[in-house]
Image 1 (cartoon, rainbow, N blue to C red):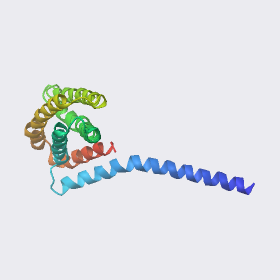
Image 2: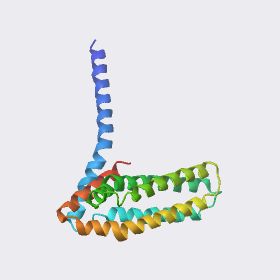
Image 3: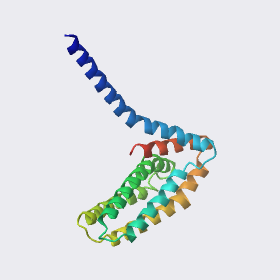
Image 4: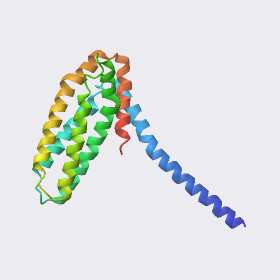
Length: 189
C-alpha cells in the first residue's frame, strides 16, 4: 500500500511540476519583458525603439527573401518562418498598444483605422507568400508588393505616428507604453 501511495504522490508531484513549468514559461516572459520595457524608458530610451528595430529587421528579412533563389527551399522556408514570427510579434504590439492609443487620441476616432487595414493587407500577402512557398513557385512579385506596403507603413509610423505620440503623450505614460509594447511582443514566443 505504501508503494501505491508513494507512486500517487510522486505522480502528483511530476504533474504539478509540469503544470508549474508550463504556466511559468507562458506567464514569465511577458511579465519580464514588461518590466524591462518600462526600465528602458525610465533610463532614457525611446519607448518606440523596439518597434523601430522591428521595422529594420522585417525589411531586412524581406530583402533577403527577395534575393533567395526559388530552388533554395530550405533557405526560403527558414526566412519565411522568421519573417512571419517577427511580423506577428510586431503587429500584435502595434494593434494592441499603439493603434488604440492613436485611435483614442484622434479627433474623429477613425483617422488612423487604415493602419489596421494595412496590417490586414500584409496578412493576406503573407498567406499568398506561404502558398508560393508550398507550391515551390517564385515569390518575388509578392515579396516586392509586401516590402513596398511595409515600407510605406513604416514611413508613416516613424515620420508621423511615433513623433506625434512622443509629443502628445505625458512623459510619465511613456514607460507604461514601452512596457505594454514589450509585453505584447513577448506573448509570441
